[in-house]
Length: 424
Image 1: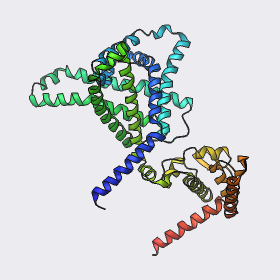
Image 2: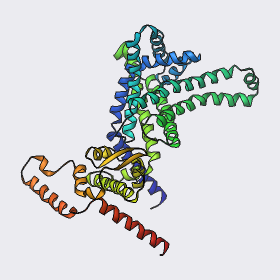
Image 3: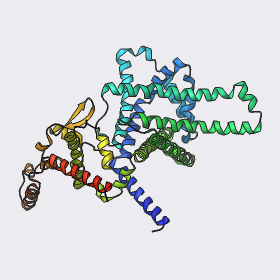
């Protein structure tokens, strides 16, 4: 197979995985939900940012940044920007009272919470932050992030009027360089914003490089799709004839949906950059189904049992997932905790066995993964009889095998491999 055939095969697998992830993660539904949340939270969100930025004296930069984000709307961008800014300007936070102020912040927090839930779904995270952790993370997103972005815009704008910059721009080369940098800075800040959210918001450790790859990919996609969307708006005069004055709102909703879809696609790219083995596994047929779930559960518990027998401290689920070449354990840990197989340790943080490994049978683990026993169906018929015979056969095969047995075999196998490596 030559290099072109390998590239064609890789692109085919990438397209299959991308399509599967698009439907599995429900990106279209997630983008729709975020669009609806944005409509409810946009004015309160900007009002909170306006109040914070006013303390730093950079509140006047909201309008240019919003206009740039809505630039693909074409001539309608200025109209939408003016209406939103007019709404924000008329929000009087001081007269809302305690209940009104609490509702204002709740609306803002609900938007960020929906964004986190969407990212956690992409990263296969079964648990979300506690309210205390959300307060810290969301405070950084809502307050610190906009201050940094708007301050960068303000510094860029003020640099153009600085006397030294004005002198240097008299030189043709410096003037061309400064023009190029001025045009690139908004794109850099857009990528930095995506990177900031991908790095901070998911409830897991995201490597900076992976967040940066996702942020740059989303930024490039934003620019490309924005250019195409602007051409679409420019050539869609018939929408104004159909929807009349609502045409601006319709176009704004479409771009809002497309923008969130781009954001989620960038998160998917960041996920696969950090977990490339997940791409390799999901591109094969063996990466799904009950057989895969059984292998993953037993392999993860064998690793926990091995650490228990060796006296090693508990480890994090993501460490076990990485050693098994998967992106995560999903809801498996929560299921085993609820069924008394595992427990979560506080110091050191991680997971450990709730019972001795010899007391945890393989069949008990498989029953949890499969969702129960065949007798729980409360049904009859030839299909049930066949499944019951199959289950009895499996139980007979697994009789007497527990986690200690598997962990001991795993340790002995590792010792034999190490001996062969030292004395081939």
